Amino acid sequence: MGVPRRVGRLWAVLPRLALLLLLPVLVVGRAGAQGLPVAAPQAAGLPSAAPEAVGLSPERLERLTATFHEYVAKEELPGAVILVARHGNVAYLEAFGMLDRERALPMRTDAVFRIASQTKALVSVAVMMLQEEGKLLLSDPVGKYLPEFGSTTVAVPREGGYDVVPARRPITLRDLLTHTAGIGYGSGVARDRWEAAGIQGWYFAHRDEPVGATVARMAALPFDAHPGDAFVYGYGTDILGVVVEVVGGLPLDEFLRLRILEPLGMRDTHFYLPPEKRERLATVYGRTDPPGLRRGPEGGGMQGQGDYVEGPRRSFSGGAGFLSTAADYARFLQLLLNGGELDGVRILSHKSVELMTADHVGSRYSTPGAGFGLGFQVTKDLGARGHLGSVGEYGWGGAYHSTYWVDPWEQLVVVYFTQLIPATGVDHHGKLRALVYQALER
Image 1 (tube, rainbow, N blue to C red):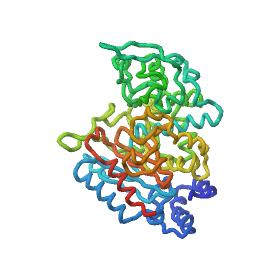
Image 2 (cartoon, rainbow, N blue to C red):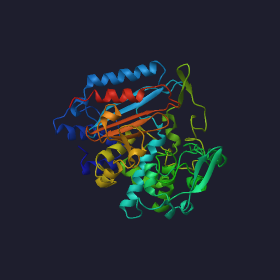
Image 3 (cartoon, helix red, strand yellow):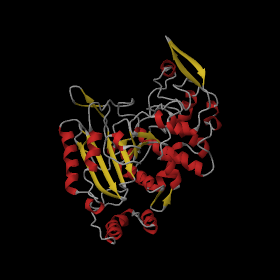
């Protein structure tokens, strides 16, 4: 149900005013030809359709709406945007709560969110693109492109401390993609050395140096496990971002912009927010005890507002650096659901997407019924997982409590963006999943 290629090309070149005038005609024409009732377009990123046109119950979706309004009323959630697309059409797009509680600014559907680890999927796609171009192989050692990773070390715990030993084998690009390189976020066995080096946690926006310089210093520090031995979630995708820079011949922000974001029409996805968009940036809040919300501090830090508007703007974190909107991110996910193509633009072959969404980790991944592919978690056994979904579904979340998933069996894309850290004691993700699936009619 993708937009025809000639319509996609027209879309790209029409002046904005003409585009706004033509948009209802384009949407009604493509869906009306199939006899489907059509809603007015809700998202700039994908065409929209009435829920019943794509097998979703409008009445049952009201349960989703009511539940998340209740979360806001109870101060369990500051604000959020939820997008549900099926068969390539946005059937549900709602904003809840406040963009900024203190300034009394309501949440808006085009709000910009810090998506943290949801950046990883885009950088993983960039690596797969370079393999398709014959510029690298996933089996290549990282040291082939970043010489400082030619030989690495591991911290092995012992009574009273730890020993530093040579890694048993080189780290490969596939190890980084699957988080089996043994590299955490600087809080493992040798946390004292990582702290002394000033490299801990996923937050990079405050760093006044290129990400390559930070990654180069990582190579000299002891890692948490031998390559291939364990699933250790950490800096793997940040290192891959530097590999993309070296192999792709461009800074990471430019490579992603030119090769993925612009071709897909993802105009609101950035490492650092353009000043003219700052009023759309959602405010970060944290859960308090007793239950309530507090505004995150201004400036840097993992639980603050961050340096995404004011700051050095030099460090492009491939693991956790992007800002985006629900509409933009849904376009990226629809590309994956379509097997690497969207609106006549092919980014990957369907075989690369197939490899990315297979389980590569096996028993090293501890979540029941799930595995891990090349950039995201994949569902293998519904009974073991214990919640609604489908075998073959894949997705991931971000530190600010955002999440997404793609369900190929149901042709479903779900994006949930909020800015809540810490988000202790909340059940938003589970309720979201249950309420989306209960709304499916066929």
